[in-house]
Image 1 (cartoon, one colour):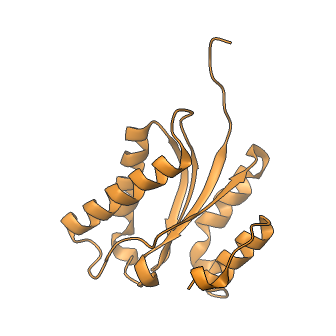
Image 2: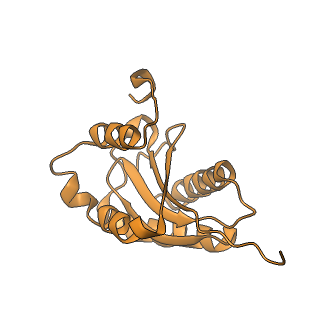
Image 3: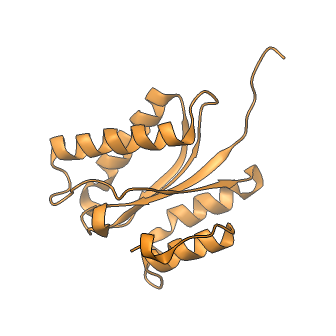
Length: 149
């Protein structure tokens, strides 16, 4: 076969270190533009990004030559350095270790985009840990609650 064709979409979730509430809404658009640039540099497709004060949701398609772990490392390292240099989120002290990554089908793409888009409304009723536990459970991922706090 002469070409590689993939359709692997990831819904990725990660939080600030110690879930510090520092990702202030008034500067998030700058952060989102930077993340879009990181995706361009990695030859990935950013379908949607949104954030709350303490965590980020991303829907992306990775280039076939890039592993998920390398993508998350590049994204977290690059954004951490940029946030610190630009000072856009005072009190930001990095990202929490680990992340959640959930594959979705192309049929689910629009629903997940809507879910990510509506994070502010969603979090009026649900906190991050409750949301994250539900995502892990829905994906049938076994987890140890000690490592979520």
